[in-house]
Length: 158
Image (cartoon, rainbow, N blue to C red; front, side):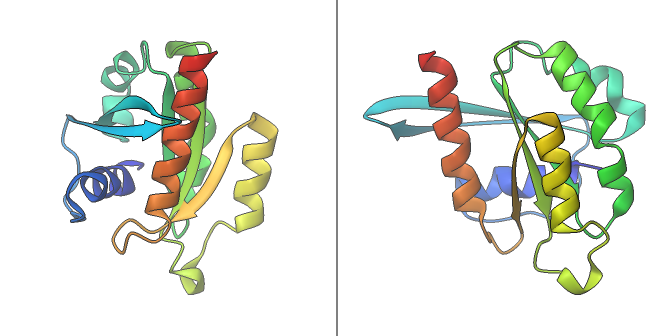
């Protein structure tokens, strides 16, 4: 359920070439950026979002400084599962982690099943950062990238 943008955004960051294949198992990427003249290495563990892989996914939260939780704004069921995925992330990841909520496919407003306001309300209630993006065209992907690196820098520095 969250795999669609994660895979595309992971490839978009690295090669400027979104992919459309589903994640099977776990995929890994790493890259560097500089924030306030300090090099930051970001590692993305792209996990399967399907319920049947949930126990495997939990093990990848351990030690994570942050998490990107991605839902498809055109598919309400992906939004409806956020609370349980958030609970897993909070139980199994670093206590100081930053969790960012990303509504994917923001270009498909005519097919929207989850309003921007609903996403913002969920984020507010759970203390999350939220953005909307569209990975296939890279809409807002650079902004998500900057936000992720800035929050990682903040976590590392505190």
